[in-house]
Amino acid sequence: MSAPQDYPALWLHEVRRSYKQGESSLDILNGVELALWPGESVALIAPSGAGKSTLLHVAGLLEKPDGGEVYVGGAPTAVMDDAERTMLRRHEIGFVYQFHHLLPEFSALENIMMPQMIAGLSKASAKQRSEELLGYLGLAKRMGHRPAELSGGEQQRVAIARAVANGPRLLLADEPTGNLDPKTADHVFNALAQIVRATGLAALVATHNLELAGRMDRRVTLRDGLVVELP
Ligand code: ADP
Ligand code: MG
Image (cartoon, rainbow, N blue to C red; front, side, top):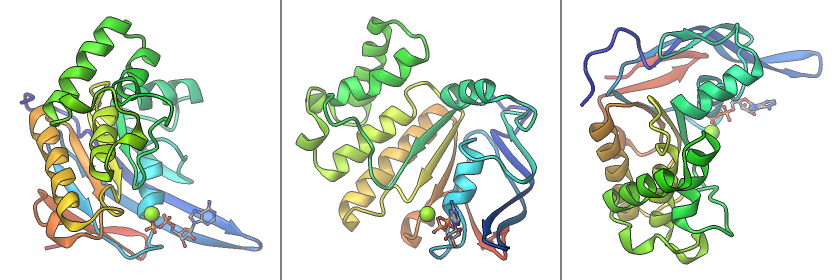
């Protein structure tokens, strides 16, 4: 468990994002406030089209907001250039998507080693950490399998291992169990929760699954482009 920390893992402050549609503009985020503290898991529950993916992309420094500030681990990101944003994303943020996006021609193990080696870790260290992660997620016997040789639930667990391979302080997941049957979704969600507890990272998970959302620390929604706390 991590020690108490001074800064939120993520703080979205007055974040605005709109998409130009010809002459008009579509305002998706209208001054979003959201702080996630280390070790905290938050479910983002909102109807399709409400802006969940947009919020996650902005939080993950994949898209720039049109206004406001995104702080990652206390660091303001608007002033950063693309190289700095990329470095921060690579080291501090992990992503899980609805579809695993694993590289099809590589094994589960290699898929998890990849981001670590890109971040500068030696092959031996990356391999050791990847083996530990896969073992931890119950996939010790699947290390050499390619994505096509894994079940949907196994693919998502490998995707979770890849997302946390570089020890990020923030995990962003966009409907990570949206493509799975209820039992498998439960299994994958438990893997995610287990990683959050073990590492003390903060997790923001967009989901339609109210039962799984109910097991997270907090639930929020998007209403008129603002993040609103749910009971
Ligand atoms: P959600 O993930 O909650 O389903 P999104 O964040 O994907 O919602 O999209 C929110 C709204 O923004 C939708 O109405 C969508 O059509 C619009 N939108 C998303 N991305 C773009 C884009 N690149 N250009 C224009 N409109 C977009
Ligand atoms: Mg979406």
